[in-house]
Amino acid sequence: MGSSTGHRVDPQYLDRRRYAFATCVHAGSRALAGESSAHGSIGWVALTRDDDDHTLQWIAVSCDSNPFTEVTLDATTVTATSTLGRIWTFPRDNPQQVKITEDPACPWPKPPQAVVPPAGDHPGANYP
Image (cartoon, rainbow, N blue to C red; front, side, top):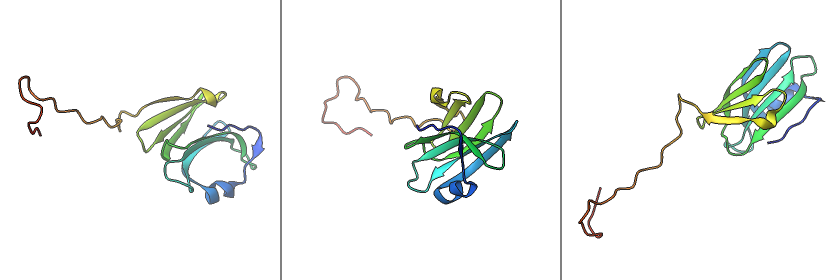
């Protein structure tokens, strides 16, 4: 995850290089979330000032989150939901302390269960 502060963001930059799928404004700040045009598994979340310069406060990029399609913003956190079924909760003032949890609306895939033969059967039997 990368982080940067205090830089001006060209509003067209996100449109050209990264696709913004979601945005949310709260108390003079704007959160944006989306995907990279480079690869479908790359997702990003950014916090900017909601001013004429769109001053970047920080940006987080994940190579394996999948795109972020929802974002919310309040006084203390930026919360983004990925298409992989994860909710990323970033403290606004310390985004490196992100917490990643399962989205109850889209649970993580469960691995297939192994078929265990009944006791006493021989190992060469065919099981479904």
